[in-house]
Length: 338
Image 1 (cartoon, rainbow, N blue to C red):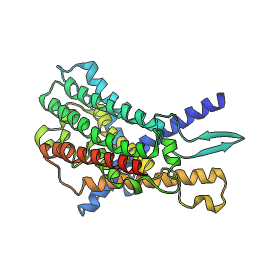
Image 2: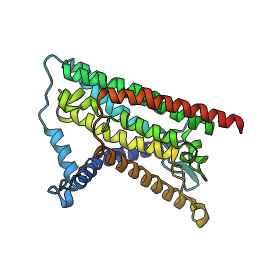
Image 3: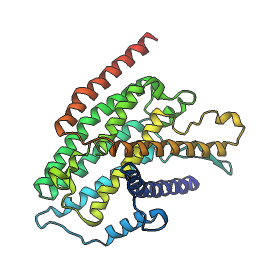
Image 4: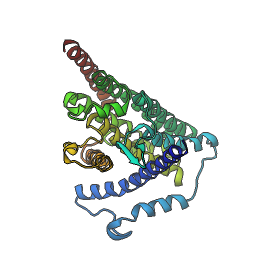
């Protein structure tokens, strides 16, 4: 019991540090990626090839002057970014990062918490992210921040419906809410083969849920100054900005797990390798998929122009939601006929 407790704590710390490190260097990759697309240099002064730029940005945010409006609700003003950051980190608890590692006769699964309702847990935690943004915008006592928070909350709630329906099609097909079982069923064929439309809907909704361009209307600087975090500075602002990259990382992990087989690696079982080596290679393969989707998130951001707000809501309610509903009905009919 003590061994498993130590293992779980160690795994939690590793996943936490990994999430923070990947989110930190995703900012550098995005700036380099944007520089490449726009035919200019990205950061290249802080360390070789600019690899210390995220460290410099973090130090700057920690030592930047703290500012809090006199009319702000101080408790909620602090709670907003903390809640947003906490929600971003909590989602990683149920993601299976690999198979099982065997050490001295003990089996250690590379998943912090495994249950029969993993997907419900993810949606429950993600829905709490609305509160962090709404609280921060309202507590600032700034009209621009409040308008940005209202935009963000209505956008996130709207796209959560289409996202949930797209996942419902996969749940009907697999018959489980467990992510581990979902991965196990994709040992030969990935779910994206059966549900390409559900994957497309989920990916578009993930862009909207993470407030990434072209769905970054809550932070539209041309209209709302800085959006819901207009009145934030220093590390409180850093929490809001950092949570976006953590959400992007976790969204990529969820997409890879549900639609692209998770840590399943084609033909790996035919190589005659030990179970531990197979597990580690599978985890590495999962991260290759995750990094590919992170780059896809960045590619979309620096390619497509920002929508108008009416276009954003029309896409969510009049296109994605009906498409997800039709996909769900078709999945049910096909399952019934088979």
